[in-house]
Image 1 (tube, one colour):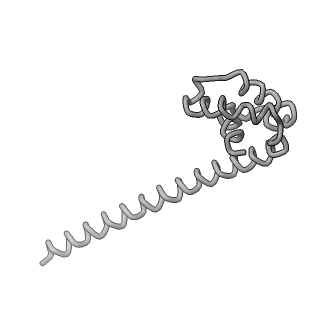
Image 2: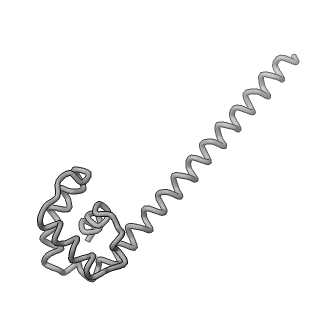
Image 3: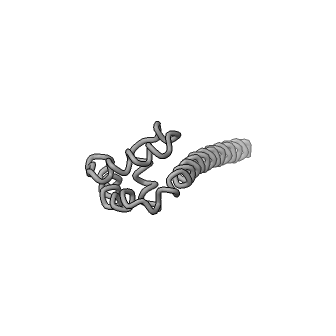
Length: 107
């Protein structure tokens, strides 16, 4: 009988530890996703005034290629749009090209 209690206590402890790890993973994932969403929203707000720009609209295909290739394909129209965005929104000077390309695609 003592063995059964010990096994039951062991399984219960393992189950609780697994549950704690899963909860921690979910909390960490939620935090990271929230930070990414906030960053994307800030970029979208900063570039929304440029939405009607012909240069930015023309860069959508280049931005899609850039994002799909993880930065390997850089088009001339995308380069022009990135320069325009950074010129009009100096607070985005340190924002990565990939994030700005994703913001262009979200417009």
